[in-house]
Image (tube, rainbow, N blue to C red):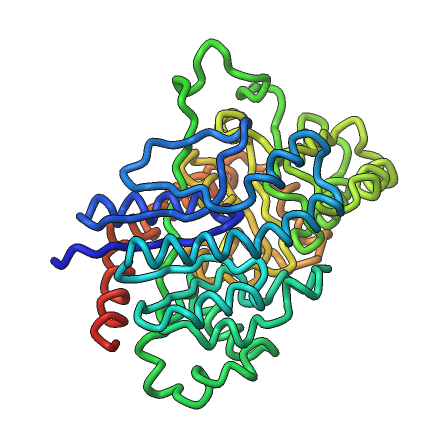
Length: 405
């Protein structure tokens, strides 16, 4: 097999766990891989790497964020810094001369497109992690403008699910992607569905060692857990209302834990928990958890819930799977691709808090049903592609792009 020099670009480390596992698998197959991103933060675990890491982006804004936190001024500085960082990235590409450039995210497409337009001799791939840009949530117009033209520079596009592929070609962002629309029959061979793999932990301490946190299994407490960045489209209000709809005698031994950095109104969520009378049973941890904390949280979970209103693929779900805890999710997008037909009973109608409440209530009341959900969730692990298989599929697409040049 031909050894390739591969650049993977994710300026903000939006999907670093995915980037890492892919880069590691490609490196293990004999390729020279460089992940271009930002510096690791003080509270972020750095995994063992068989590839190179180039912290090209956001050195200044990351330092300012440590001092001042995330605010509008920092975001303005980050946007300005991005322009200079893109120039640095371009120079690195010219110097290193990779065989392939694999872009994971474009924070400012109208800027990033200029760089890609200057690189004509190297094939460029782009992974569309979100078929519906920003999940229809509020974002700066600077993050949207130029997205269609940016996609025109891609020699190939990767989706993680067939749902994402079909959804993308039906939404507004694909309508003016000329190279995709006009050359669809030719280009179709370079539009690939390559699945997302299971995400292993970066935690460096012995698993569940003497310094474990409070998130340990408790025979009398059934922890129902949501974790991940708290955003509107993730359906957290649906989960809170659903937990509140469970009869008090059924949920007497249950506890709801909602953990993750808040990118929506935390006050509104707390007020809702108070409104449905579950404040004493609902704990919020509104910050980014470390890898070790996520391990402990999942180890101590009784049930993990993903009540999203839309989803292409959930990294949090793929992080939770190896822990063998039952998982239920809304019947949307990538969840349907993953769960059906084996785990169709694990899905509930998106936004229907009564149905979710009934499902959680049934699990709390029926030990046999709960054990069945555990067994089926464990069986789901076997349906997930290994990272070596994913790297092999990605490698084949790289070679098709190179041979097409």
